[in-house]
Length: 566
Image (cartoon, rainbow, N blue to C red; front, side):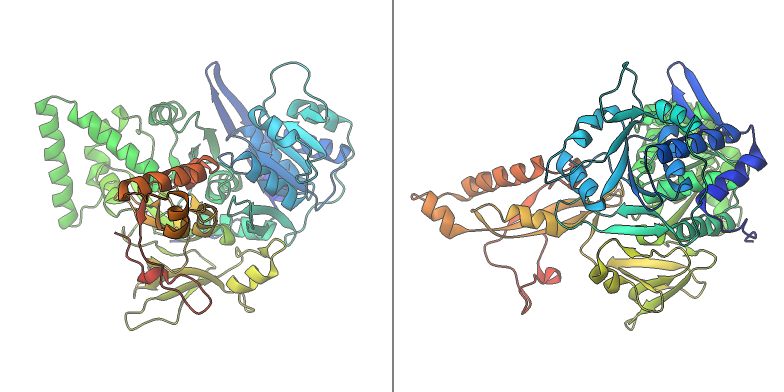
């Protein structure tokens, strides 16, 4: 049964309410080799306001853009909250982007202040006429004496805040809070504009849909990812929960951090949970023959129980196994960012861990649907959150059409891109997702295919084929190229390409002609060249050679659905 929400407030109002209600309770915890660094709610409120006053002292005004670039940490969160407190607009950046991609986004958004980790300092400090840098740079993790000119450490900014101006104006619900770039391209990335109302409405809807208790979240996904920022950062603060930041994405450290923090909730993408499940099975396989037999017997008992309506036997029967695996306190796993194979949540549930699959888009702050805890359907993306409307546009005879959603969490639009905004937002507020799906009689939603060309990797990263295609055809030896996502058995897609060689140009450069293997070797060099200038998750993993041109529309667009991919 859904709970009544706590209310829709601006982000600084949420922080103030939680500081008043939860005081000395841990809000953010940073794990280090020397021990945990704990920030309580009252400390968080105090430090955020000092940072906010420090930003004002350094000339930041409401509506100015503030970039954040660095790994997950309490400092990242404080920077975000301080920016929101003074009415600034956060521009979270993906640390996996290339130097040129980051500088392009800094320039496109006209960032005035940038919070950056030390390892990105040189990138952000460069001042070229093509990529003008921010006026002030705040270093999130400086540890080496006096920082460079034009920079200030986050601790210095806090000290500046002690003598800074008071915060006289606060943002309104409809004010812009963040611009989230959905693509790290050097061409035309789209900046999703989200207001305070958008983000906190999504938090409130999630709070109603999920039984959030006195929970402890382990933060693993990058905080620039809207899923993690909203559901793994803002929602815990909204709910008075605690967040511990994992030291690494490596399974060994995640398990250690889960055990040490006693975390109860973790968000992740399919690949992360796939690796966790594989780790559990590996651990079981190393046990004695007798212990492996016991595990098989218990699993058979769980499966038998499912058939007669006993759904939670694994919670009790596998308690010891979960504790030994470091998962003893976990009660809820939430997966998003990419489709997941139904077998994975089913396997986790049999081991006594609930896994809920949801669906969302950055354009929706991002969560739109979630499976209910009491009745999940593992092949479904769940039901719409409270306050969210869904409909299927132009359904076929099977009820499959484009999914569209409407609700208070839907974005304001794309930054400086009215044309793209009008393509996805209708006049009456519906967000056209470009994803094909259907809705069953119980109200569960399903994704049956992607109407867009977007490739979603197993780690939940978005890859836009057009960007890669334009880079491939820069080669004189490539006539045409089509990039697509090849589905992986673990969920998500792998980036692949189909290349049409320019045999005429190849013949001019290689008078004697080239054998098929030599042409492949030649094209491999071009693919490698393109990959070198891309973020790792965008790189092309393999390609096919096609001897004839692609079928096209009258406007010369490739008819992708007519091109064989194997």
